[in-house]
Image (cartoon, rainbow, N blue to C red; front, top):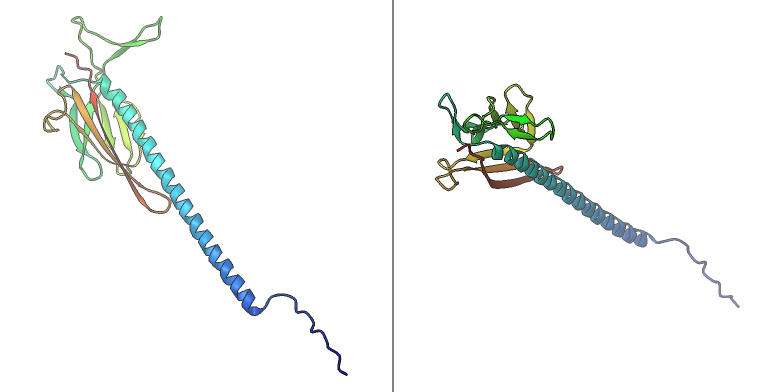
Length: 205
């Protein structure tokens, strides 16, 4: 009488099971890689956007600080201030050339105030201050006899309008500043940002 023999149990996985497992792992790995890539791209874009926001805020602060102290006036040589000049890489920018008040410092309080003439009128510094936009996108503030100061980077265009050039929409005692920023993030995506504001000048009259 033949005895029933137990079939030995087979360990491990079959080829079909291994194939299925490998396919699942590859699919999960591809999805994870894609997700990580998207997160990195979004992080890079967010970082670049934040950088543009910081550049715009700093430029607005520095330009406003200067222009508020300048003014519309005619000097002894019958030259009207501020002046304007075309510039920038594409020649489409309108840049301001202006003068600031001459300052004196109180030795006791260390505070600076504008120098006034015998008629109580403000005395203007003989140096001219200029906004210049380079081919590399850097916006500079230059002055006679001084090193240029970088106001902002990634600037594509800046337009400074007065009452006449704006079509009489800007107040007579103010200037309107429009700035366009552009840069690419680490993934090569192009980012744009525009800012516009009006600055009231401190006139002599």
